[in-house]
Length: 257
Image 1 (cartoon, helix red, strand yellow):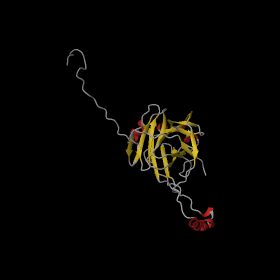
Image 2: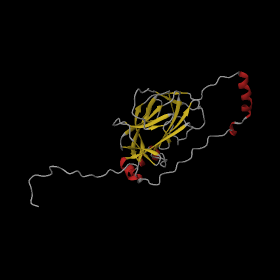
Image 3: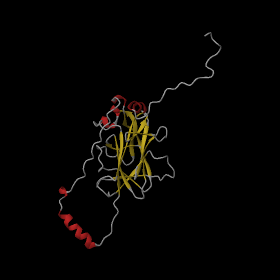
Image 4: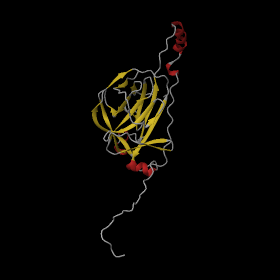
């Protein structure tokens, strides 16, 4: 069984309104240089946030349930813990009931992360490792925990007998998630944002065990991001109107007409 990470979690008495409220998990992006939770913009069924190039950011995960959940975090199509091309069956973070944590970078060890930073697409971690196609999206696959069921010993034995005859190779594997259709209108690659592999910082976690209640995620969340100028150019953010306000005292003495 793959080791799962058990983050140091803080139950928040009051937090900002959730950026992406799912049934099981809230997903938000925090600009660590300003401390602000990034505003979301809804466009054609997708949620977007505008990042500032060069700024550090964190992904805030908040468990809305009374049980533990596993959050498999993908940034730019890359698993934020293992560095693998992301897939829901991989390792992730386990959150306690009604708890919240901020993931501030790519997991390098149980004690360190490499900071998430908004950077130009060619400088993103995904592009530098040969995987630029999915740069610009943060995703979370959420799993609930299987609850142990206590039964009589003879009942368990009856069910175990046919299961033992089944070959592991014959068991059905979870289907690969369908690739999402890409937007038809993209800003030029040189203007698009990605997530860089920033400086190391201390961020301790522990390992734990977690048995998933289902093979497929109970919930999948996604949040797209780019620079403010790029989102305006794509029409995600309405272009600001240039307005001229008359001035009551624009000049000095009265000139000839």
